Every structure is written in C-alpha cells, then in structure tokens.
Length: 155
Image (cartoon, rainbow, N blue to C red; front, top):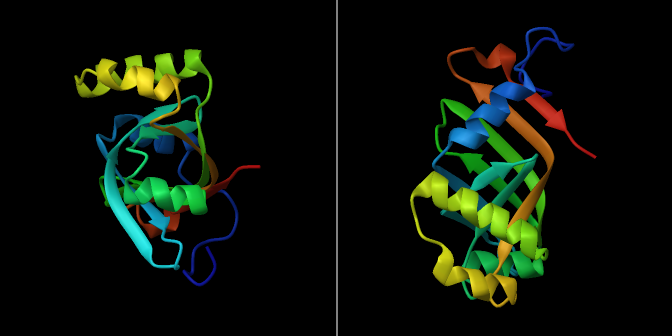
C-alpha cells in the first residue's frame, strides 16, 4: 500500500482466514456501484460469502441493479469499519438453478428470512442473484494496527 509507510514484505500481515471470517460473519454489507453518468452509489445489502464468492440479491429495477447492468465492477465492504474487509470485484448473475437454491437456503438460515417467494423469479431470471468475484481485497484491523493492513490479489 504505497504512501502509507508500511513495512515491505509479508511478515506480520493479516491471514486470509481473518478476512474470510469477517466476510462470513458480517450481517450487513455496503455495496458501491457507479451510475452510468459516473456518479457513485452506495447502499446496504444482506449477503453471503460462500466458496470465495460474495452473493447478494436485489430487485432488477433497483438503482444498484441498473448500475451493475451498465458496469459490473463494484466494491463490497463489511459492516465493521474497525475490522474492515473491502472487496473490489466484478459481478455476474447466477444462472445455475442448483447454485441459486443452495445460496437461497444458506441465505435463509443466516438471516432467518423466507426467500421462497423470490425463488421462481430468480430461477426464471426475472430477479437477479448476483455473485461478486473478488479481484482485490483489503483487510484493515484497527486493533492490530495499520502496520498489518493487508492486500490480497486474485486472478
């Protein structure tokens, strides 16, 4: 992280397991997208970290869905800024019925919220279920100090 005076090398950095734990445990997430005219848009979503991918749903006519249709790049942030995990990635709609079912069941357990009324619309792709594949992830722990700020890069 150039410009922050952090030590060079990997010694003392946060482990990936630290980031994944926070991605799995966060209840609310911030999502930032870009409007077609370039203005930013940030909103709260519920989401699920599963197998290295972040999943969330939204109404197809929502501002974030319209933004993602025009530009699939987004940023996802966990809810606790003092233990922040920031995911920069690219979103795609989930198309496989089996994956939609799996994500919805796990989503229901996490949030104690019945998703059955959304299922058929998602299977028919009337309403989206999104998968965000990370490109870069940042981890910052206030307690651990800025010297442990970590960046992970993905292909």
